[in-house]
Length: 535
Image (cartoon, rainbow, N blue to C red; front, side, top):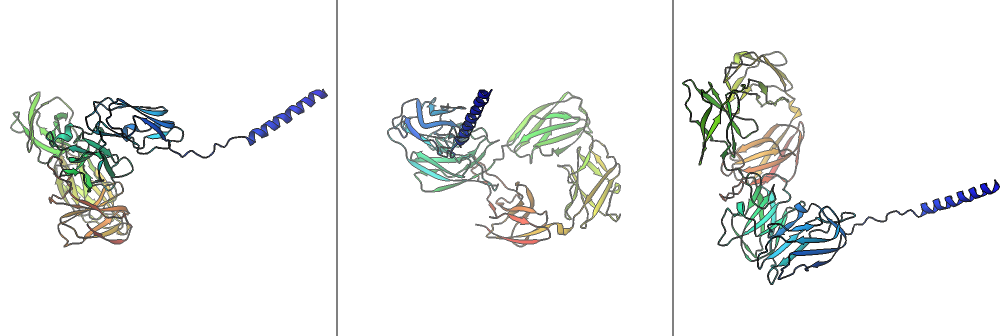
């Protein structure tokens, strides 16, 4: 028994010593590795001439991965089909580039990896590595640079492709819709500046695209574009500024369809102003129709009565140089019913109208069946106006601050196109104290009139807008909700009271836009003056 306890004691001592040793020897992991990978060699070597191989290998001193390669990789000139690049989704000590395209003669190629090359352990990047080679006897070494801005929004776009198209005997303006450019670079995600390198001397068209498909082909419906109106010449010491904009698509009618009883939806691309709908099929003597705009859609609704006897009708849609005839199939569908709702349910500003929108076209209002009472039960006089296209009735009346207005619309106050009438409607709206709002005066210097002056919130939405044809009146923004805003000035060069983007084929640049350099804060019960000196 004594020997047992002696052996047990010895065992406990040994375990305790080992435990202490283990604690003293536990590794801490050391300092975090912040060293990027290093390239040991490339086969063929970087900046090779008379290049005639189909495979490139780039060797590193440690295991690397490729992150977000599809977005980061830039190959100039583009290869079609693109090269096969590995590793993808795994780690390796080398990158393999297998060229699938037939390379152009006497051409310098650059493969820019952006920030996609990172080490396997800590993700340290090997930034902006470029592998360059030439199929000729020398490397082209010319370059041009500049920066890309957004023509309307304050914040610039990221990952903008900047491209050069060679102006030669085969060049025409439609090349950006059909062919890939001669040279390409990208602003990536951190800067708005760009630099096109390894260029050959010559004359070029410079274009920038913010793409959705990333195929270097301009898609008018989805892409933003910027371009230099005049061709550029390389070599050049100029710094090129470009302004991205979203073109208004060329007008095109979408095939119309019956969407509910006696209602045909005419969708379209581009602008619907001055779009005409002509019925080609025979109609009854008492036939009537009305057209309204669908809320938040590029669609016109064509309402008609009575029903057609036929199973289909023919209609022609036209606008400017566009004209197309469509067949619309008819069937029995349930008609839309009249529902009247207020557009705004928040507190009403003193200078705002109370607006109501209907689900079917308004045709009449009986003001005798509408009552507006303030909080003292005093009847308030009002006037009404109808926006037929948008199907909105506006009720205008004098309001006082910190008041409550109760509105009642008895049955028959509103009548729609199908002789349907509303049931009893009750709405309540309030006004705030004037001290709950702020006021801002904007003084413009060096302005070229007319201008549109806007206050933009942090989401880019227009909070308030004023139009000025000259400097005869101050630009006073009243009853502003407290918050942070930006002042935006649009130079309305064609005097149509809206911002016009550019058009590539028409060689039109977007209308000029300037932002006040600082964000402004509107405070309740305050009046502030800002002087904006335009350059």
